[in-house]
Image (cartoon, rainbow, N blue to C red; front, top):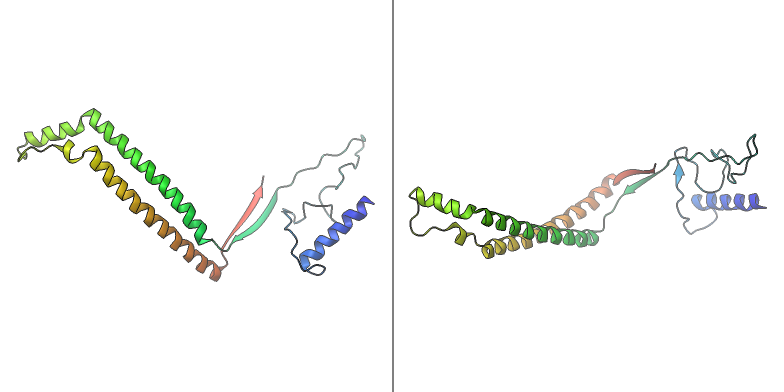
Length: 185
């Protein structure tokens, strides 16, 4: 009885994949390297379905696992989802950039780089009237500039990613997209 049910399920799956029996689409079935389904035992499957086929000692045989592979094609990328992901990633990158510049500025200030550069400029005679590098590159000035630059980078990166996604969609209609083979090892 159980074998008849499994055979009926197998026939339904075959009919659904050819479109002969039903008009609705059946779910995709992962295939092994040899092309067999991972579902119920079909003719020529590499192992029995019930795993109770006894060997000489009367113990059940172990299945030998097979690597399954699935060939997929990336034919379309949704531009709106690309825009959302790129926006969030670029905002995160902008925040990281602002924090990194603040830390670097603090490190340079603690080490005394700004004072040393001011002393070098004044000792060469190029100081024409109170040159102070620390006042030119103050923390507020540097962070304001980096924040404006980060905002511009967020907008440009998001627009660029959306344009690339739209171009990919057009090109994939011409050539069929990127073909990928996925496998579980």
